Image 1 (cartoon, protein in one colour):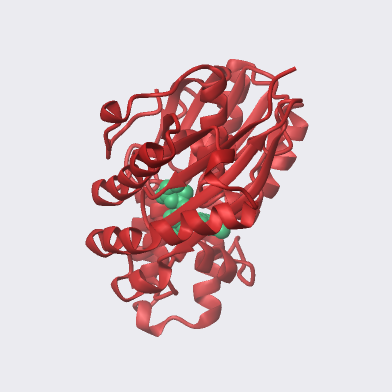
Image 2 (cartoon, helix red, strand yellow):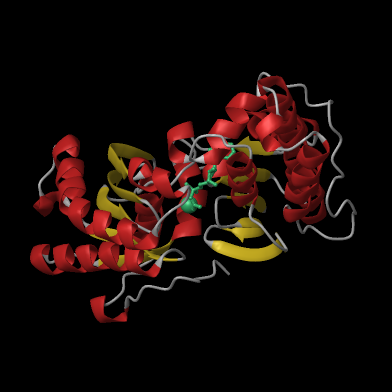
Length: 345
Ligand code: KG4
Ligand code: ZN
């Protein structure tokens, strides 16, 4: 039996300032004591995307408030914490630096060990709430605004890249199509909401990289196909709401078809026992439904994060930190550096 451990996680890689307190109990179960996310959506909305300078400024204004709230909601004091985990990358350099500097300052002030965590690993570990008994090998699908990766996971914390996007990330494609159609920011959730009232058979888009000999993705072609279709329909200013809904539904179906096809293909290839998804696009309802059905057919256990843990948060960072803490993977403050292009493998 292990000792109970409490960790403070800090995440500031993009446009969410997040802090969470997570506990690993004596039975190795993870429990969320607090999960605070301060979203900057309103600030970036006028720009239709994340404005990096504004993101850094907001993080620096919010970080202390968010950490204090996380401790308060968890009903703990700094003395109760065993370690501090912080995202070191990938992400926006200015944003990462605020989180890292904050974590280093608290670690120095409270005399706590520091654990650097890869943001993408945090998306995987968001699944470990209520699920610490995971069968390996597992297959990991990370689908976010910046990444689309298929990972072979032979064991806990061990990753091998077996597929990735050759151009746009899945979330990026959702966001760009949504922006083109004039939907609200952020585009992914707005597009999938409108798609619910659309007919996904109305427009047929070609399934990208539709072959069985690799696990890579491509999303920029579907995006261009949407633009071309809209031009043949008379331009985006002349679309009816029904046409927009049908385009969203057809686009979403093609993107989800592609994600499902390659994920299941890769799962079979590595003989995966478990499928783990993470990242903002894993909140997509159609993707979750489709993977549920497909993994059941293939007899693979399917893990998806709670909806609020799909997009950026500090819970996954905290859990990854707890796992690393038990493995003794703490790091000296001076060795922790922001890495905007950090790889998970
Ligand atoms: O993981 P995340 O919060 O940030 C990154 O690490 O990039 O992912 C954000 C991405 C955005 O592209 C957003 O549009 C997309 O996730 N997203 C969705 C949905 N919810 C968020 N995409 C499709 N359907 C959704 N329901
Ligand atoms: Zn993310």
